[in-house]
Image 1 (cartoon, protein in one colour):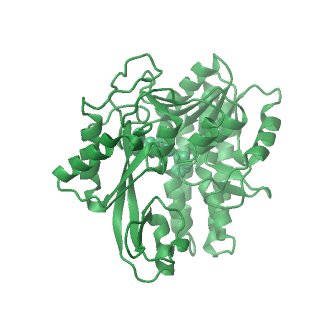
Image 2 (image 1 turned 45 degrees about the vertical axis):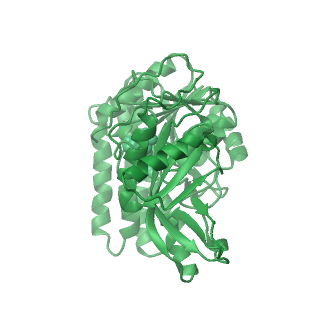
Image 3 (image 1 turned 30 degrees about the horizontal axis):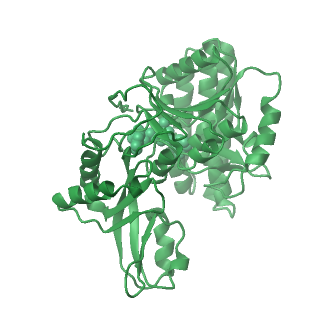
Length: 454
Ligand code: ADP
Ligand code: ASP
Ligand code: MG
């Protein structure tokens, strides 16, 4: 069985949904498939905004809820009656629930986070209806599955943690039956043990696919997105990127942790533990091979990609305040008075500022070089630092050695783009960089990336 996950841009509009459905149809010919769908591009952002601003009489959010409903219903236009009518009914019911929840949020309830998660979950609850209906119209028997019925999480609304054992038991019950219709599962969401809807954190549909891949013991998980697999750098920031044909689990995990949005940071681990390969591919260019992520089997090291964690706040903390720090991206302590420099995601910096007294802070970004065992190769850090020095870019801190597969550089926020392009071109485009022997016998074909205009 294969798990196929389609991201929001792959489902943006009827044409793209049909293209995704045709890919599913092809795969179904060769075996069972479980489909995981994200919300249609832009929908979750709109829901987040609605949840934040739903106050008073609700004229604005009611209009927005109707607009989301219309957008989804329009996509169904022209489909044959039975599949279309069932999907239309479900879409109207989901939007009805959304309006109720926004009404509740307007009263500022005590369980605000719980209700907000139900609001955020609406995007996926709508998109699965579209994909399942289009699949049926192409002659592929399909059914929607709400992940709240199969993915069991804790009750941390907004960023729930999955309980794999309980999820496995539920999945076995739901998937073991005689129903051979291809399941189309809502990504991004689950439910706690009281049955309350939770969400797994933004970008969490990749994680949903990984969870299902792991508990259903899939032969592979395919992440279908809008670029040619994992690229050598974020394409919006670096013009000279190319597609990476092959990555180890460790390399992919480091890249996603340090900001490569193409994979949710928690996607790799459950699949790596079971040796299930991941393929990242482009829905808009399905003939391209994309990126295969599997166990490392090369013998030599090189930098395979550079990632950017854009929105970072760096603090110089005196002894005693370290215990206050939550998620740390990077830290460095090399000073006579015990001062430690820590870099945290800016999203978590505000609470820290409230708790520490004094101490310098600045807006920063982290540029991370990733490649198997590169932290032990002296030429990697040397070449990166030298290239930045030539451009006059100051490295505010440097970290290597915690992971053998990553070297991190802290730069001022304003220097990010320049630093990223510089390091990328110095290490990725440099022909003298030691070549790696990969298990993949095919020569690494350089594929031109394709970023959708959507
Ligand atoms: P989806 O909707 O398919 O989940 P996302 O927007 O979450 O898509 O992730 C894909 C996007 O990730 C790409 O369009 C690209 O802009 C961004 N991205 C950032 N870093 C990388 C990278 N190293 N490789 C590929 N894409 C990246
Ligand atoms: N729709 C959710 C989001 O926008 C989950 C995802 O796309 O993976 O964050
Ligand atoms: Mg994504």
